[in-house]
Amino acid sequence: MIALFLIYAGGVLAGAVREVRLSDAEEMYNYLEQGIAEYDTAAQKGVKTAAKDNVKIFALLAVGSLIKPLVWLIAGAMLAKGYLTGFSLMAALRLYGARGIYICIPNIISAAVLVPASIYYGGLNASGLLNRYERGAIYKRFFWATVFLAAIFCADTLIKGAASPIFVKWASGLLKSA
Image (cartoon, rainbow, N blue to C red; front, side, top):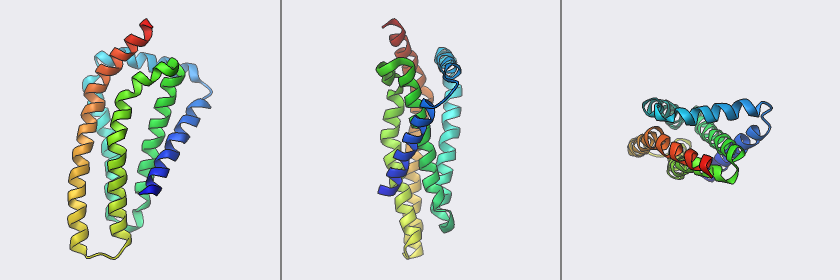
C-alpha cells in the first residue's frame, strides 16, 4: 500500500511539473477561465464527465485486482489519478496564486477520501492475488471491497460533478472580486 501511495505522489509531482513546463500556458489559462465561466450550465455535463473519469479509474483497479498478470494496472490507475490532481492544482495556483487553492478545495476533499480508499482496495486485492490464499476468501474479500469502493466512487462523482461546479463558481467570483 505504501508503494501505491508513492506512485500516486509521483503522479502528482509529474502533473505539477508538466503544468509548470507547459509552453502555451496562456491558452490553458483562457480555457480554465472559460470553463469556470461556463460552470453555471455544466452541472449535468460535469456529473457525466466525473462519472466517466471515475469508471475508467475504477475499471483499471478492478481488472488489475482480478487478473494476476495485470496487477500493474492498479499502479497505472493511481499514477493517472495523481497526474490529473497535480496538473489541476498547479494550474489553479499559477492562475490565481495562493488563492487558487480555493478552487481546488472540492478536488482536495475528494482526493482525501478517494485516494486512500483506492490505495487500500488495490493493496488488499493485489496482495490477495500475489499471495496464495484460499480462492473463496479472496473473492469474498474482493466483492466487499469492490462494493465499498464503488460507493466511494459514486459519492466522488456527485461531489465532483454536482457540488464542485457550484463551489468553483462561487470561489472564482470571490477571487475576481479580491
